[in-house]
Length: 104
Picture (cartoon, rainbow, N blue to C red):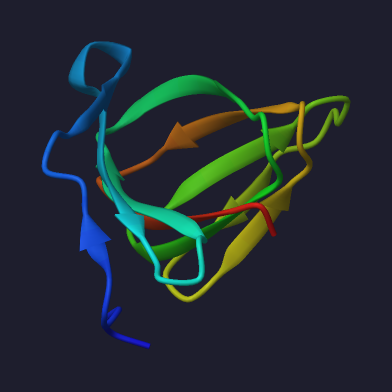
């Protein structure tokens, strides 16, 4: 899917890690929420409240989930799931274009 239809976009950007991650929230009529954004080349740790699925649209990254010793690499067309109340380390190897699906 190349676009989302019939959504509300929150105009204020979500800016994390001193601008290394910037996204916008999308609100769907059924109450679901997603964010679309970019992560600039960096090494970051994200904490989750709700479960998430990170869908990679462009760029490459390495991810290590909380409790895992090994890193896994992801690129365009791939995704990974993160449990709620958890965290993951991400190393973006180049500009990463993503969609985060919340509550999945």
